[in-house]
Image 1 (tube, rainbow, N blue to C red):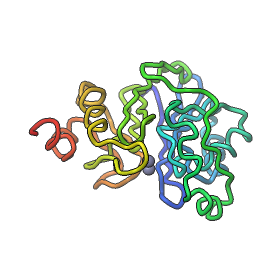
Image 2 (image 1 turned 30 degrees about the vertical axis):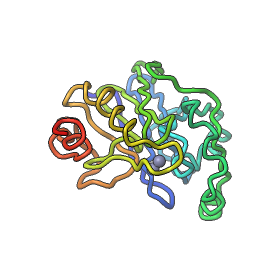
Image 3 (image 1 turned 45 degrees about the vertical axis):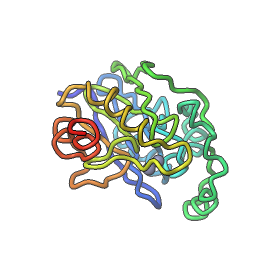
Image 4 (image 1 turned 180 degrees about the horizontal axis):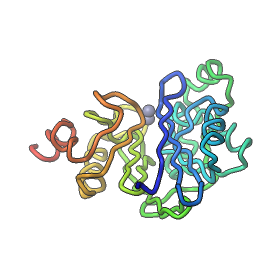
Length: 220
Ligand SMILES: [Zn+2]
Ligand SMILES: [Zn+2]
């Protein structure tokens, strides 16, 4: 049996994937990219009998962290994000509209930094932070029990855009090549948006089908 249970909740105006990852052994959970609807996230935790200990953001784009402030307050848990992204998009002109659409107050600043190679405990299960800049300077992926949460770094059959503030296609390709491709082919991909033909994939399949990997890295 897998060490963790993963629940995917597409939330908010942009249907960003919020993930709740629960360690069976201890009933502890982390929330990755709480994108809206904090009560739905709390109800889901309660239904699983799980207690969340941390909020992790894959990156600082406002649509991925709309429920940060509400959940931090309701659950009294810290928000983690790479320092390069914390507050970077605080003046994003889209924030006001997102706040109007969701009734939430956006806070783009993290309580604690994420660092490359950092290990966070999820109950009895280690979670590793991989810094993968390119979509944003502070973009991170999270690896836990062979499950890789890729945010907007890597989608099923696609990759994150690099034309926004702080983005770099060269950096994104470098991150995918040096940090993600060395992982086992069986690694399961859980992206920040459901843009592919299936919600999840594996590294093996992406090496066959994802043009950012096949065209930029494997057969340049
Ligand atoms: Zn993004
Ligand atoms: Zn996104």
